[in-house]
Image (cartoon, rainbow, N blue to C red):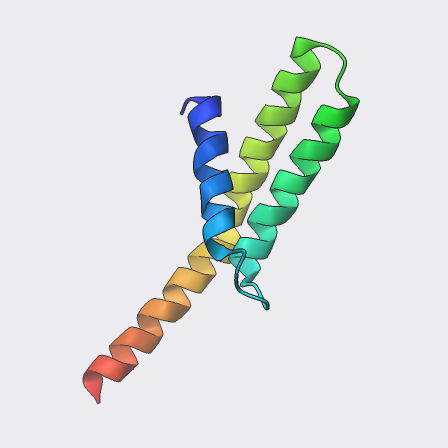
Length: 86
């Protein structure tokens, strides 16, 4: 995935959910990954440092997707199935 596209995609994702006062664990995880990227980029000196920051953010985002976001989706699907059965 193109790092620039991924950055814009996840930034848009965060903005879409930022209006919620009590954010979901998925949105909080993604927001934390974005904040860590910002801090990393603030201290990056070279292009390689910046690339490493982006690679680390991508790993964190995948971890969010694999853990918090997946659990959230499964919970929503289970709730929907429960409502549909009623």
